[in-house]
Image 1 (cartoon, rainbow, N blue to C red):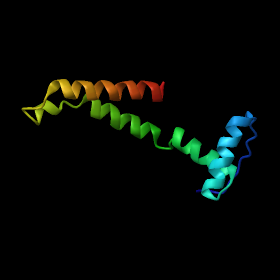
Image 2 (image 1 turned 30 degrees about the horizontal axis):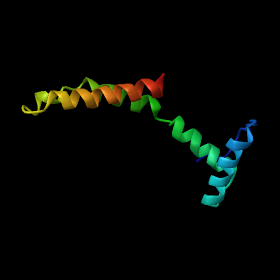
Image 3 (image 1 turned 30 degrees about the vertical axis):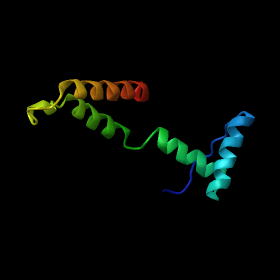
Image 4 (image 1 turned 180 degrees about the horizontal axis):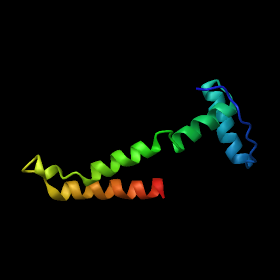
Length: 90
């Protein structure tokens, strides 16, 4: 990771702070490192590439490659993936 160049100040309620502090203690690290990891998890740097890859996956018709594929199973899987994408990228 690059050298830290920006300072961020946020206010948290006690419950959130305690959760972050407990995780920092568990890891043996700092509260700031837990916050940075949470940001990376929620907003990955390659988010655009991931969104493109998922769109391509959802557009793919697997039945063209596997003749006996159960279309209902793919439909349910695709629907679950679409719901997750909508929630994540909206």
